Structure formats: C-alpha cells, structure tokens
Image (cartoon, rainbow, N blue to C red; front, side):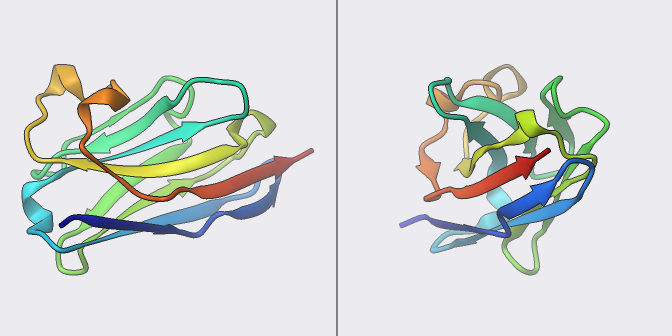
Length: 125
C-alpha cells in the first residue's frame, strides 16, 4: 500500500523560499512518477510539477523558473524547492504518485492513484 507524507509547509513572506518534502513508503519508489499539485480555496486542483523515474521534470506555467522539483531515490523522497514566493502560491500542496503515466497524462490530477494528505503553504504580503 502506497503512503505519501508531505512536510515543509508553513507561513512565508513574499519573496521567501520554502522547501516541501514528500516521503513515500510501502512500494518501490523508483518505479513511480511523482508530482506536486496545489489547491487554493474555491479553485480546482492545479498541476505544479512532476518528475519521472529518470528525473525528467516538468512544471506548470505559473511556477516555471521559481520552483524546482527533485527526487532522492535513496530516501524515497521528492522535494519541491519554492523560491520567490507570491501570495498566489498560497494553497494546500499535495504530493501524488503513479506508476503508469506518460507525458501527456501528468498534467491531470485524475490520472494519479496515490495522494498525500497535503501541506498548507501561506504566503503573506
């Protein structure tokens, strides 16, 4: 059974940096495509970033150039380094995982079978 646990969220000021972590347990981590999504109040869940097994990484347009996703297969962990934070980055950030995704599928949250509980990020101006 896949378990995903996020951490690292909190309160930040505009321009600050935060690093989120997501630890996977229960399965072979290096076989999974991993992703971050976020959801702000009253809005749909939004793709943030995804990383394939081979570490190819893709980003949503709203975070490109500011956020960096990485994975450490030895620690069963993915990270989301968030720099130059903006108030519109305020959301609950979710870690997601799936074994069978292709590039055309990573953008849609419905294609992921496994989710963490989420971690709140609040950016104050």
